[in-house]
Image 1 (cartoon, rainbow, N blue to C red):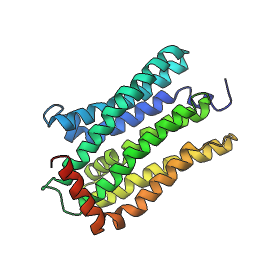
Image 2 (tube, helix red, strand yellow):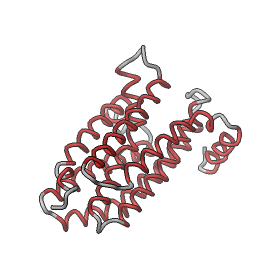
Image 3 (tube, rainbow, N blue to C red):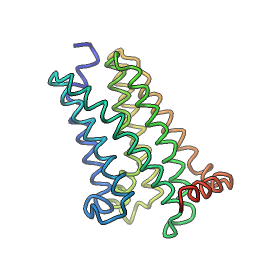
Image 4 (cartoon, helix red, strand yellow):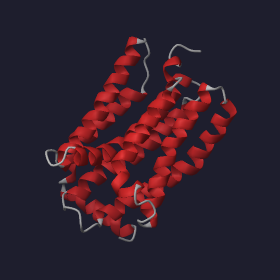
Length: 236
């Protein structure tokens, strides 16, 4: 076993913990009333959940030497599940933008988080595939995709658990800080092992950039005009 692979031998337990946090965050709005919402929300929620389940199963299979099954499920996830997840996410952004029940400032801000996150998910998966013959890099790029679900899930969880002391915006900033701390911890852990990989520093830069810009950009008239056109294009 290569030096950095040992730390990922039981990564499925960390992915399982991530899935538990995401389920807790979306429990009232999706998992408890599953199927009660519209088809778009249902498809997106199920595909996003299956992505985490895939990460869990992929790690578990590799820890048991099931390489062929790892590759088969990986191909299915990339060429079937990933497109469904991304298209449904793009559709949900349009639906959210046209939601009259949300405060006017909120859809542009969440869309600024969501649209770059969809693009970054594709980038991470593409880099993972490019590094498929470099297991330590491949594992880290795929692991980083799980963190993209944390801001929406943890924002809901923090706002619910710590209400009324923590409002939505404080919970949103808290969710980003949580992800940034996780990534810093992973980077430091790699450095202590003598590992140098792109996945976590790149992800940290992405989250910090979105965190810093989500307020200023979402208030710009140009961004709001773009979102209105985007929602209209998708029929909202």
